Image 1 (tube, rainbow, N blue to C red):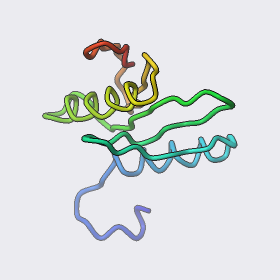
Image 2 (cartoon, rainbow, N blue to C red):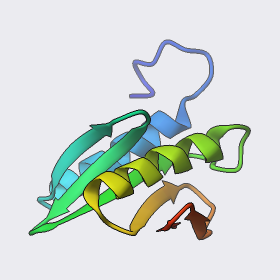
Image 3 (cartoon, helix red, strand yellow):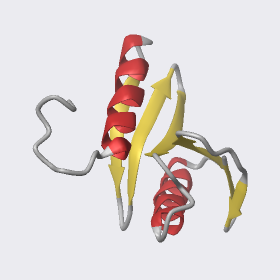
Amino acid sequence: MSAVEFSISKNRGKLLENLVFLEYLKAGKALFYFKGNHECDFIVKDGNTMSPFQVSWDILEGSTKERELRGLNEACDYLGTKTGTIICFDHEDTFTYPNNDLK
C-alpha cells in the first residue's frame, strides 16, 4: 500500500488496520463491519462467538481515544457482549466505558 499511496503523510492506522484484517482472514475468521451511531472496525466471528475490535495506530492521540471507545462500546452493546478490544501499535490498557470492559 505504501508504494501506491499518493499522500505525503504515511497513514499508519490504515496500514495497521489492513494488516489486522489480513491476519484474521488468513486465520479463517468471518469478518464484519459495524456502523450504528458510531463505527467499529471489525466484528470477528469465531464459531458462535462474535467479538468487536477497533484498530488504531495511537489511541492516546487527540480525540482518537474517545472515538474508538464510543464505536467499540456501541458494538459491544449491540452484540450483547461485555468485552471489546482495541488493537494499537504500542499501547496496552484497559478501560471501562460505561458498562463494558474495553482492552
